[in-house]
Amino acid sequence: MKITFLGAAGEVTGSQHLIETDNLRLLLDCGLFQGQRKESRAKNQEFHCRPKELDGVILSHAHIDHCGNLPGLYRAGFEGTIFCTDATADIADVMLQDAAHIQEEDAKYLNKKRRGRDLIEPLYTQEDAEEVVRQFQPLHFGEWHSLASDVKVRFSPAGHILGSAITELEVRERSQWKRVVFTGDLGRYGMPLLVDPVPVEMADALIIESTYGNRVHPPVADMKDDLLRIITSAHQKAGRVIIPAFSLGRTQQVIYHLNELFNENKLPRIPVFVDSPLSNRCTTIHRRYQEHLDEDVSKTLRNDIDVFGFETLRYTESPQQSMELNDRSGPFVVISASGMCESGRILHHLKHAISHERNTVVLIGYQAPGTLGWRIAERQPYVRIHDMEFAVKAKIELLGGLSAHADVNDFKMWLDQSTETGDFDKAFIVHGEKDGAEGMASLLKTYCEGAVTIPQRFQSFTI
Image (cartoon, rainbow, N blue to C red; front, side, top):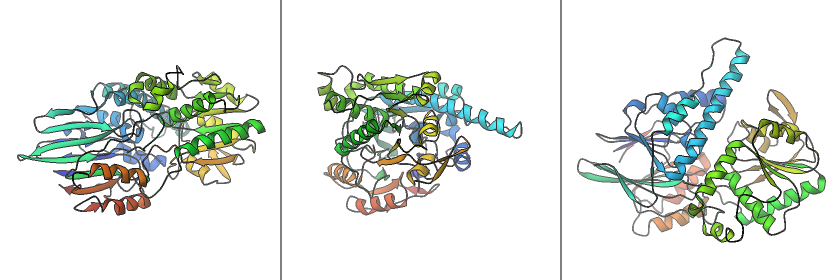
């Protein structure tokens, strides 16, 4: 068996790992590379997995850096099956439609500036997104599924977002079974909404993410307290709180915290707006899969009919409703996409808020280098939004308590539970920058009998 690392190798985005045997070719994830437009587009346009020859894709979850180039893979000739959990299939459907819309709109915008010279094509279209979704085959958690006579897969909850899965893959090659575990993005213990990551059994190869392999997150409870502190201060100053948040996962967790604060009579009477049609659709799917959420949600639902709604919360849909927020007076909170401030309605809210001292911008979680969110997090004195320079005078708050990625303590807990019957043979560390990956390498030496490797893009290894 050969494993080739085609994305999220030596970096965080673009998750894509190819597994090959004499008669099988499977891709683990097919994510978009994110970052500087020119560099990421070049990576996203090229497929090194020979799409027409792939037997299938195993999708860990529906974040765009893990699923976002599936329509591109389809466009390049992939006709196989995409295996994932049922919630991931539903979420990926709306995520990919949104991503395709962004691709098409970005191409139109850039082509207007180019005035007919060397027109740019979108990476893929909404039609491509619609077609690739037809290739999804949802599988239930906790059951072994035979994909063919020589390959089996089992999904276990990863605790990262709704539907996210740890993949256990068993492949027979020349009468010998090999076992691979792919964490996808591993979640944290004790997170709001989500169940804890489920341990697995030892394997010949462990492919493990390392986004925060050298970090310890602030306690989740601190995040709730920080949100209350920030919103209370904004209410007193009659300022706006702008929260860029990923439509999937992060937005629902923020809303859930605010709902708790409202139920506890702690939240100021301040209007809260979720200004993202994609976030609204993702929240609807969360309501649909409430049985997949944690025990605290079940307890809350005994006295609260909607954990994603309270009296002062409004979900906006139309562009007109969104624009009206920018003309609104008085304090309010707006949660809008995208989480790294690279596209969407959040750009308009930042344009109207970032140069006023009474306002606050709250950045939650990782901001990829080169993105607008990263520049704001670096507190650069000026930032460019829609080709205009804006002075950064708003207060910038960086909150890590809601990161959906495991930190070093979460990894240790999961590894302790997963190696109770024996260590992993080899380990490959992906989805992390240098410091996180090296921190994970130090941790894994205790849990692996063989080599612990940090692969770089295009490197291949034999199992």
